[in-house]
Length: 268
Image (tube, one colour):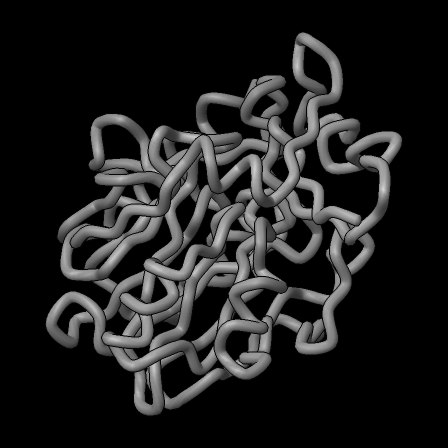
């Protein structure tokens, strides 16, 4: 019996004797099946080929696989009273990485932006006394490895603590979520967007897609909904989904300009 990880998207699947017949996340039009066909790795094989590294990314500790694996996102550890909140997840949990997170105060919770980043969330939760895993209930159908600590929250927002608020923007997925960290950016506020709002290569703007690899854009109504979800929030910094893909300052104005630019670009 083995736990199986999809090589293309990094989603972990339950223990079975043989790998699953397919990965529903990769067969969805927002993702794609490996050009060489569906490929699976056991958890042990993944750990042999990759290691977890951690380093600072604009004031937050990030975790990612090296060499890069699947979609290549990094998780972020947001400090909070009672432990860290892991934002998004990676496809592997190792003893060394778990020990490092313990040295930072451990995990009080895990929050996920959307199904492409569920990864090995059950392993991470189990390592920290079944830390609650907050993911939006509108995306519950995409959970590939059900686990007892998953909290499928509902509605447009969910407050983890006084300083950490989850906000549903939709768009990329029905339950696509962003995290607002009130103490971020030295108290000016930070928005952790994953790729619900993708930080562009210029690191001065964001953009929006229904599918990034298949180049399917969001429509104007969906982008306006994302913008409305974060409009009431104060933030000066945006953290994207990959190392260094952040907007360091004046991020709220950059977000608003990006929304206007995007809608103008897709309009008649």
